[in-house]
Image (cartoon, rainbow, N blue to C red; front, top):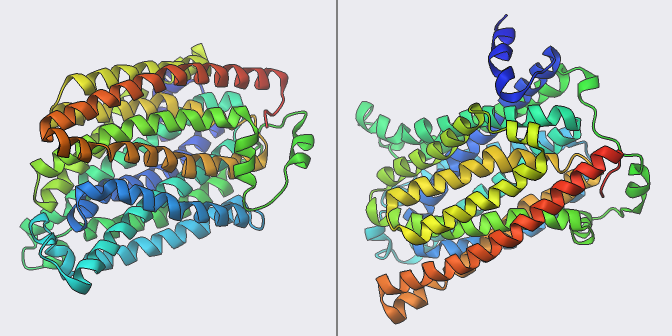
Length: 475
């Protein structure tokens, strides 16, 4: 009865589902809720912890460090997929991440983190200083890797168990449910330290962000249970994937190995196009994010206050995305097609670049970042995930991992390198003029990327449609 009522409410928004099909996407969506809830909790704390332990100016270095470590991680992940099933890899990796998150909660809940205000970082020397620095960098890389590998693996499983017509309706519903976890995590879990400060002032161990990290680990363990429930409770005929008439021939041409996903990416224009779309968005947003976080660090010097602000930001991103989805933005894909959805996003981000160069305010940047990422999650994200449906099994799992992990981090690294220009500009021209020069350069790069991005999106949409119409895999 409850399922029928929910389906009746959501059908006009996401499209008409069969009952078992609707239950399938509910299960998938609840799994994604826990994944995104955990990720956005630690992601919004990523900046807080790193800024507190290391400093805001060192984030470009952290991004460089993360990409260097993520490459061997993706290679190992690709190799594991040759020996174990998709679900076993998900269970194993998620379990390891859950344990590691608990370990970080313990490490962060130390005296060194408690005293890690920006005013005393410079006063530290010796083992304590370097231990704090290393912990900050390891935390940054850990969060980046979870967001890349686990989310990519989840969507690989989703695209490997869904047909194209069903994905048009279901993937937007899954994203919408995921936003619920992504709102609750940063909005409420990140505020636990402040809650315990007022309710349990005699328990200082609960007064820093490590308590939120511990809760995030529980959410990771819950994602394992719900994925298992999804795979075992959904009827088998609803767990089938798209099969192209040329799929066996394509799979024979793919040689196994730790770099198989990377070779697939480099050999096919279609995959390079998906890589480019990810790259352009992440690069532009990384530049936005750098200026936003520097202003946030200057405005909120207390670690808990900064954590609450970043938590509110994370919730705002996902709340706007959820509102967009509930207002029927997914109907753009259903009625106008993936090509229109993919091409609309660069036009919207082009408008965001104009806003970034025109207004200088932490509150404006707050909503600019929230709006940009929300549109990506609500409109561009579900469309991009559908692009993997007319591909081979190895492409869905291995090439997608390289695109989502290495590609996403490479774009952020590109943005980080570009952000490194800010400091020399400020040294030469002064803090205000130097920043203005950097913003101007950002606009030139941003507009150039948006133009190329539009035509790449056009190519991807048309290639996808042709593959589905001809019942062939692209690669």
